[in-house]
Image (cartoon, rainbow, N blue to C red; front, side):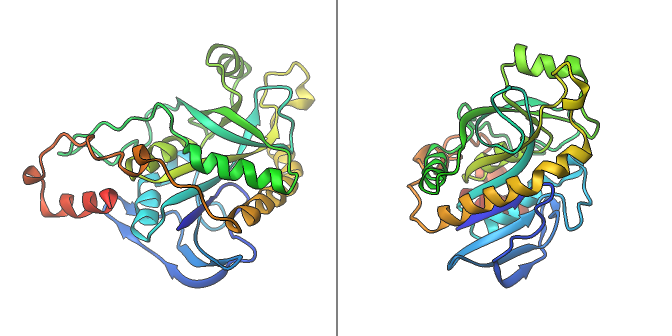
Length: 282
């Protein structure tokens, strides 16, 4: 089943026929918002507002572990994540859509980055964190509806909630070679891999961050909302086309990401630990 995670400004999915609303308490706490299960374009999907209804949570306050765990428990196999992002490249213009293939973690340690620890040791490969099969499907959907889409971009995740300095913007663009900057996709993308889920981010470019010399081009909340609405509609059009066609098979290295990653023996785990680990392994 496909799960859609909506970012800033995308708190509900128009056209989703609600069948059930799940308010789950997970071993990692509560989700950002109730998870809506329903039918979209005749297909069963899950929808979760990352920042909560009415945007209650700052990026570092989002309970990413609970969100990903709950989606997995409810039967998600793929995640289509929608996020706003600033552009670090002139060719990525405000209003454009960009598909992420790599993530650069520039956060500051305030977030819970892994399901593992506290008695369970595991190390999961994230060399290629985005699912290539889902990337292909999203690119193909955009092409069918003639929606321009920048592909294979690198997303830098910063801590926030403040907007960045120009020095930080130049560092991410030039030293880290990133194309986009945002505040939410880490650890979300990496937790999805730990949960053996296919994951891709479709970024809605809202601004040029602050690396340009002209202050009028710098990021602001006002500019964000000027651009975001149109980009959301384009993203929804891609999603609509995506769900109307069969998905490509998720590679085995994603579906079986935990097969050789967990170092702690099962007989060393508590009943509660075994229970949630079994859900991730399913």
